[in-house]
Length: 211
Image (cartoon, rainbow, N blue to C red; front, side):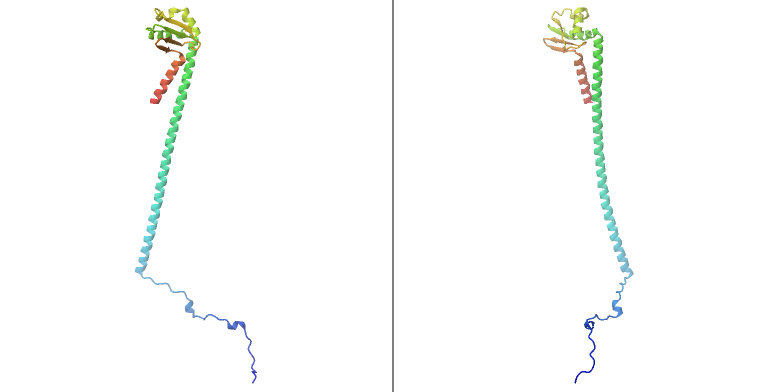
């Protein structure tokens, strides 16, 4: 017997699986746990201890960094202070040396000018050398041309030369006016202006270094 009933249309979505429908209470959020006052106090105390420990650790670390930075700054300042003091001392020494050299240069110029202006400036130098070398048998006195001419023409200016038969006066271009150089068999006595200034300058520098 043929099926005379109409066939319902077949829809593709009719065969898809759908999740089961849950009751509304199944989708609700779980209820928060209820803590007692004792548990809440314990949790609060633990949180306070944890926060205090972290704060102490952070403070100790920061203090260590500050101490290290302070030591570094102090060491740097001390180094700078030593460098400044060393530089100051060097500048003072250099300035003192330059001042000393300038003073001696000025003194040498003044002495040369006075010796050039005073023809008799060599007389005290020669008399002192002759007194110091009076016991020598042979003496050679080297003078500038001007001073040689003066003393050979005026022997009365050198009373110490009386009785010194071995005394010879020589003109020497290496000796400036106002200075003299005495040679004996035992050695020489240098009374040139340049030599006296050098000796004085060396003595002043050595005394400054010792101080």
